[in-house]
Picture 1 (cartoon, rainbow, N blue to C red):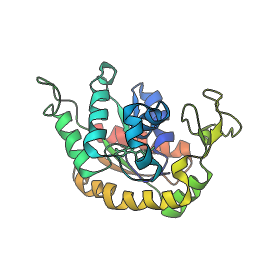
Picture 2 (picture 1 turned 120 degrees about the vertical axis):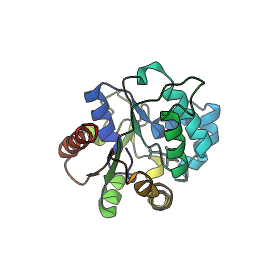
Picture 3 (picture 1 turned 60 degrees about the vertical axis):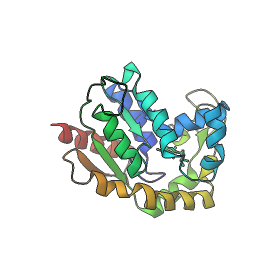
Picture 4 (picture 1 turned 45 degrees about the horizontal axis):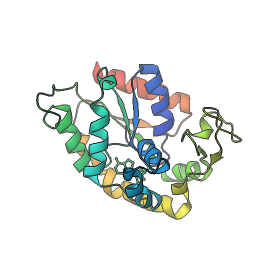
Length: 216
Ligand code: AMP
């Protein structure tokens, strides 16, 4: 699933992964956790993320392929925030066909690609209001409790990269680096566009219908 920052990918991915009982793999969340834990990866990407830029393709692809190599992804998985560039999409295709995995990797079922689209004014409004848990990274608006995180009780704070000037940079990066994925995936029978500018429940239902239709 891809879409601009604030399109609701995280919110939808949490719901869908729970519904389909498959792992939700959010590259943003994986990276934020690495930053919080101050791992070598976290230290390497901290400044890039805070500035709204994209982490190096090779680095993020290694993180994702390592995660996809774990056995819980066998029945399926939901990627949230990856791929974000055409180079990443090409790496993912190679992985899915078995060409990029360990020797003898079996091909996986075709990707279903969902573009979640939302007008820019709405995205800016959402990001200005977004609050996340400083401990576990959950979105606070998902449960409408802004005092503490309902998932872990942690403190709820704005995301550092939701500051206005960083959001402008992230939107620009999205337009230049991620939007070309519409063309990259556009002709595939399993590509669907879903309007994310609706109530969360309606968007969930629309994604489920789109995915059902794509795999039918
Ligand atoms: P997100 O939570 O998806 O908005 O991601 C937060 C930040 O993590 C992005 O602004 C990037 O700095 C970094 N990031 C997440 N996913 C990727 C990716 N696929 N490629 C490069 N950087 C990424």
